[in-house]
Amino acid sequence: AVSTGLLCLSLCLSLYNTSAQKQLVLLKKEKILLRLEYGDDIAFRIKGSHDVVRSYVNNIYDTAVVVHKTVVPFHKIERLYFANGTFLNVIGTLLVVGGVGYFAIDQLNEIVVQGEGASLDRNVTTASIAMVATGLPLMLIKKKSQRMKRGYRLLAVDGDSPFYRHEFKKGIGEK
Image: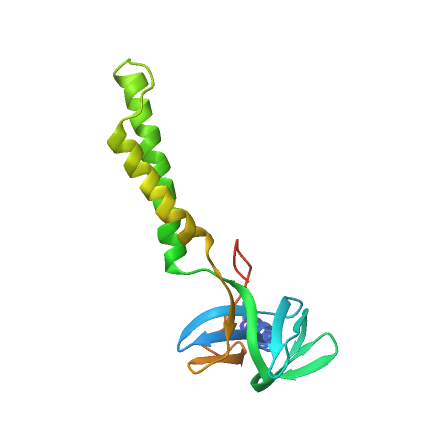
């Protein structure tokens, strides 16, 4: 009975390991910027062309990706198009939230705590407007593509790779 259980367990584990699908990752040195699986949308430009190809990932090989019915070698891809948020986007969001929150807390303090009418404090208003005006562009400006230059590379990874994410599920804003 014990040996049958061990046999079942080893069979299940071997099936799990072989069923892991490949993932296509865009690396900048050791940092993953983009992760794609079968069926994901992909947009790229081939070297020497000005047209952007928009399709879906049909298959992933070690050195190429199949989009719809076309095999595209990694070295032929000049640019990948995807929303690429940065640390500055986070800083911008914090500045906008902080500026609006600072103004709202000041108004709440004036009306509820002090029992006076709503009034604009010049210093609070100036600081709030400065924070929002600085944070809004930082929050909204995002890089829409990445040129495949030195330090960037596409890599097909399977379940044995440290770059592979098991049970990969897309979150908000993640590709």
